[in-house]
Image 1 (cartoon, rainbow, N blue to C red):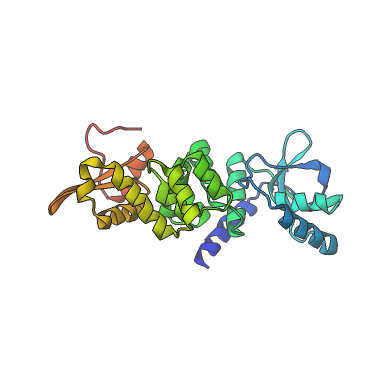
Image 2 (cartoon, helix red, strand yellow; image 1 turned 180 degrees about the vertical axis):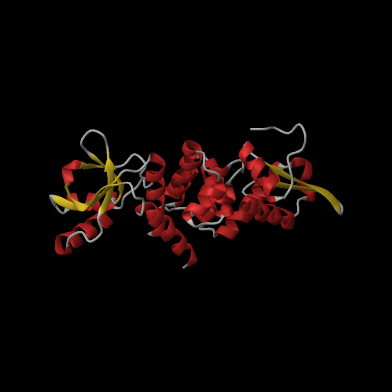
Length: 284
């Protein structure tokens, strides 16, 4: 409930922008086109068909939100699914609210709307976060605040993009869950392990154990000392920080290694630890 309230506040902030080109009105279906910043990549045709039947019977209750495209067309910001269903229902006009918003706001709006309705797959969600980070320079903390999720959730969702393409496809198709995918991040032979998970119908916890065993076999220098409890602790620390974690122990002593993939990740972990970058460390 708290997360949905946060999402609603984020959506309200975007809807409530005073830069309204026109109030609620109607537009012809032919005057609308899909948005460049739509985070959804897959639309369920059966779902579209059911919505089309509803539109025929009851009309469209929630307006489509669009923005001027500069060529006389309107670019859909939120409501592409309703627009597709309206086409299937052979409607001519649909209710539309036209807003003058930026590219970044268009992406934010699409993400928040779809997350609020829980319509995005984990990789669509990850791609949306990556675009906010890469194209608009938002930090993970800023993205988390925007969408009403924890920073750790955003970090772990982004990590799914590190998986091999074949494994990502299995997640997109719903054959593997995001939890299964996270267990395979950074693991050599992830594609083969993914097939084993499918063939054996393994749970996420079982997949994590399988991945640990696979990683253990490849660590020749430490294979005899490999401790499942240590690997489990590495996994939990990795999920909490969004970084790759390695624990190297010798008896009761040892070291904790956090590997970062960008200066932003380094800055983030330093800030969270309450310290300052050491002299001579990389600077932006």
